[in-house]
Length: 110
Length: 124
Image (cartoon, rainbow over the protein chains, first blue to last red):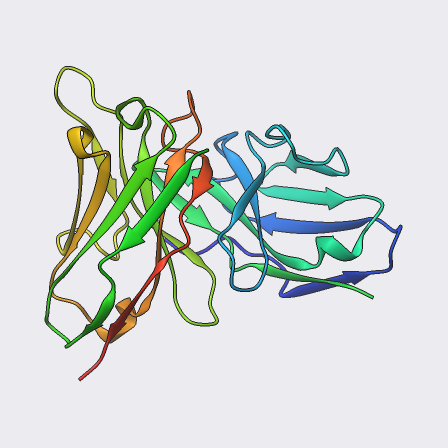
């Protein structure tokens, strides 16, 4: 199973909105609604930001939102802030009770 | 406060074995599924293995293809601990290994608490 496809990097200015895509196949993103997004700052553990496609755990800012269309999931961050600069990983349930992560996207806040 | 603390990492020769531990506290360990995820230096996250919470004395387990047959996940609810037995280690297993807690009610799919990770280096 190959990793989900994410852009290597995205950037935006403070206050702007950005969207990170995550493309899979009919064996993962396209066939299941079990998509999540994790934020990881350098040297830190990942943090769950979005689950079940568009739900936020307690404590996660409403500036973070998720969506899915076909085999592509997306994470949108609105009102970009300096603290949002981090790596972001999508993750999807896949066939045979396994999970797949995306390759990760480095977000730079200009 | 939920805490997950990994240990057992270190330097091991190719073909060798290592057992990682994850000590859990701050929550009812037996009621949660757990997972192991690794991250090679400068690379992305890779899911490795999952173990369900214990019902009727047993747990279900799942593995990624890359480690199936070489790694074994287990848990000891009496000790609030998760383990990963790693055999036949290869250079490509070099990574930081994280344990993570499954989001309650969502089993295998999402992980809401993570440890700080333990580094495993496979090299001669």
